[in-house]
Amino acid sequence: MEKSQNSSTKNVKFQEEAQQLAKEIEKWASIRKALCDDTTMLAQYRTMLAKGRTELANKRIKLAEGRTNFANKRTELANNRTELANKRTELANKRTELAENRTQWARERTELSNKRTEWAKERTDLADKRTELANNRTELADKRTELANKRTKLAENRTNLANKRTDWAEMRTKLSELRTRLAGGRTSLARTRTNFAQYRTIMAKMRTELSYLRTGVGFIALGCGFIRYFGLGKWTILDFGIILLGLIIIFMAVKMFIRTLFHERKIMKRLEQELTHDALDKREREIIQLLRFSSFKRVKSDDESS
Image 1 (cartoon, helix red, strand yellow):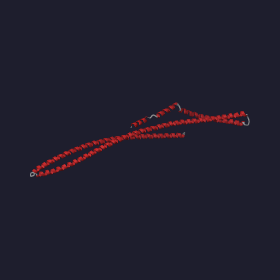
Image 2 (cartoon, rainbow, N blue to C red):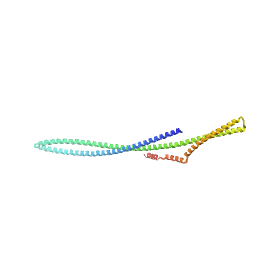
Image 3 (cartoon, one colour):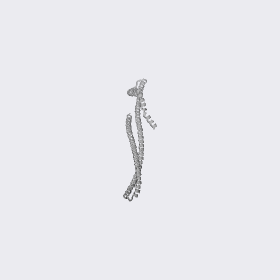
Image 4 (cartoon, rainbow, N blue to C red):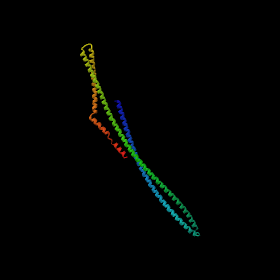
């Protein structure tokens, strides 16, 4: 009995440690779920920032297009100015005698206009390159937005997996509670079985003591039969010895029987307490309560829906 009690206490301690470990796992699972929610919020904020950058890039593209249009208009004006300069050169050639200095100044102005035209062309090329860079930046921003959306979806999947893991942890905790309660019921049944075994042992001992009592009565009957059959003589001492042996056996058997009867009454009261109608009803209610777990159905429905 001491070994069984020690093993039961060890089992109870192990189950309590398992329950504490399951609670800690559930706690860490809730913390991880909160972290996943924060990560999802950060991903959404990052998506909003990426959209804002995309809008700024589009506005920058529009400004670059406006600059390009202004550069084209400036080029057209320069070309018109060049034509006017050429006409002015023709008029200056006709006025060569009167306006040589003016012709020289016009030529220098023409050269400056040509340089300005070249610079305008280079500026236009640079504006085109800037437009290409803006387009590339827009494409990169779109790709970044797509990556942010994928990251958001992955964060949502991670959150769903964390929720499922939390549900399984709750199920495992309830299963450990069920195992603990079943172990308690098994312990009580083992105690009842032990009481029955003790009662059976006591009944066997009482049967042995009654057989001793019957043996003592047999010795007394045998001694009395010898005295009556053979009468008094030298063998009468042996007959009285047989009768005395029977009395000793009867005395010892009665003493042992009374002691065993006292223990039998004690164990019988214990068994009557354990086997009362209220105790059996209570045990039946506990067994029915053990089998009621709505979370199992809920987790099963979640798995089927997924």
